[in-house]
Image (cartoon, rainbow, N blue to C red; front, side, top):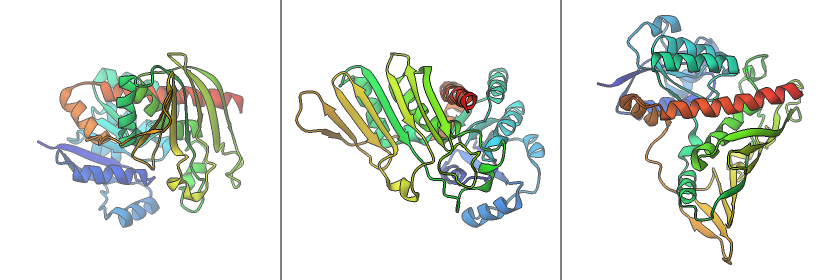
Length: 327
């Protein structure tokens, strides 16, 4: 029997990816789509050809649904997630899952009490290059990890970015918005956690129409093996960022060399001590995605994906809180 999935919110085009994956997934049946804002509803309908349901979210949650896909505004996601989980539904959310530690703690309590599962659209861990890097790190071909860095700059893009980004209480902070991708990937491929935050700064530099919007974010954090992580996830890039090698670019410095990869290439480049030329390793097909991992977790009754999403979210929310204290 197919699992039934409800889509709630089409406020960001990220959710389009999830919607298309659900359409292609033979284990899922999309039984409804909701969007409360008329303009966003029309835009999504034009993009995806969706017919929206008139019933409200609370009414739908009383029905026989297995999964809720959450794509409302960032500042509304925690509340939407809590409602679904309290109703006994599993959820998959665009990132961020929520925008406050209080919301996350409530989500964690309900997940444990109701034995429901959570997934998030954290697609970097499924990059072929990331899958290859994970395998190479597992082999310890370069020895122990000593330092890491990543960049994940985005563009402000006033012409296309939803206006609600700049509404008070809707965005939730640049660290929570963007760093979640990099932190989740680092945790996934290294098996290391962020042990402490050594420094962080957020500030306004590019969102000239919204001087209160802290569009730049850099931080340094210590991992559980003592390695230091440096990151920049600012909205500082030009509009062609999605074709630039700085867009989700990872460098992992180990005892015997450097491993480097980024989103726009499928390979991993290794500079090993004692060799004259870099070694190029082709990426590995992940053979799965964040939606399939959720359905597998539901069928198995495991909590691997759920716990990982909660841990990554807790880490970046903690960082965001520290950054906010310094503003």
